[in-house]
Length: 292
Image (cartoon, rainbow, N blue to C red; front, side):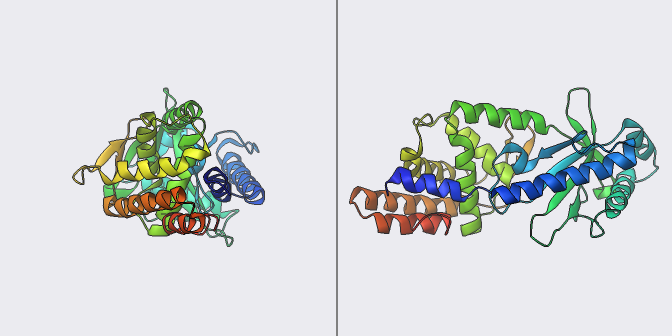
């Protein structure tokens, strides 16, 4: 196999199976229908909901939780906004109760912003109840510190990622998925949106952004070099499209340096026609989804 072949295989291995995608779509439709029945007296399985997070941006890998927004009517916002204290918590509890009619294990997650449903097959959902704004952003509840309303604009983030992905021969989203495999293998302290934000920034200026799998060894090396050289004092970045703050949860530079060193070694092995040794180095970075 050539470099192009094994990176192509690796990228295919990172994708969810068609059965998994079908399961996700079925659950998404059922959750949407449950909310619409209670809040709109509608049995629609598709209206007033949106895939967000990694799945919405198309950068998920096989391990992803599924994030979705369910849009509630404005009068529901008015009702809970009128509460004297923490109407946000009361709203989350109400939506949890609605979902428990179908999913008895629904629970408000510890971050106080979403309702979780954990399924036995590990394909878990995180549901954000929200209200549409005139600019197509959403207002959603945060029950922490007495309760407040926050704004999120996932459509702009999705559009920005899609545009740059198209302009980079689909390399952006593949890089995001590869970086998630590295995160999983090496336990890197980076959120999905931080990976996507930094990959978006990196690839915009990368000289081979219009190439394909043959350059993925260079793309890996150069992305890890970019990450390891980020100032460790920087604590946040601006998300593509929405410009919301994306905060780091820990330091990732030292693990990026290790990955960079392994990528340099892998490329050296490739240049010496030592394909097996090269692939073992890539597996040190990316794990067992990389072909051996």
